[in-house]
Image 1 (spheres, rainbow, N blue to C red):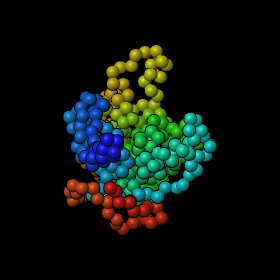
Image 2: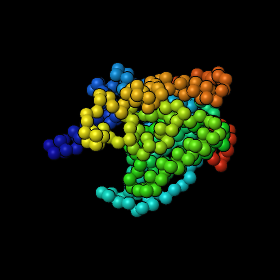
Image 3: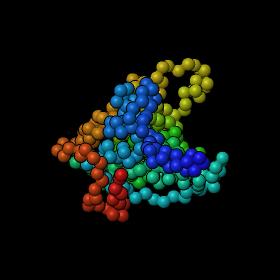
Image 4: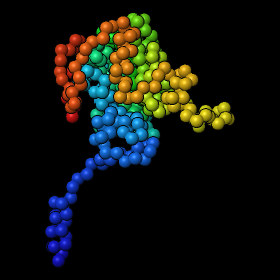
Length: 313
């Protein structure tokens, strides 16, 4: 009987067992509703029932904005991976390695150059899945390089901010990225090119205190948490109870901190319209977006600065 129970039955079970992906279903943080992952992905990571905006990865974000889901990855300068040889519970170098393996990104920010309704734009996207989208030396270099490319191409610069703040493992070197990015924004402003910031959930800390609040137009996604310090810290400091919805996108719009709150489905046409308005460019007819994601190679304007994006799955 041992052969029947220990060998035959397990083999039959293995044949009949079906592998189920871990993310087959998603639970809405707002309503608790269970939603099929593919439906959420097809809906630009917005829960269909509750309209809750989930976090969106850098590659998916770039696909959703650029024409025909096509862009060129911008080559970014190399920086020292672990300048302070920092270690807490784990080595900082190991944390970086794990984050790169999990997200497929080199650091928290990905920069692309492409067309938005026929007009050239540079877009930088922070990915919160990479160490909380924290601002370190590499992320600071990415923002500065994107701003420099926008100056070179004489095109608008759009940044999608999502961050927990400065990266503590890099200490003062991380904090120095705040004035560096601020200088880069001023450099773009001197060329009279638009700088548009889209604040996504969450945008906090040193990122909010620097380039995320310097846009010519400040856009926020619905329900996004936006602020510098946390609500609990503020309450303990001022010793008062904060109002309902404090630091949320809608509250900040009502109090003048952001210009508009835009649903993710309306974000692409809104950005294109703002770019045309701020650059005084005429509207350009573009082909409809394909149903399936496609990344195509095209002519590279400046091979030294821009490299074709790798095909996405």
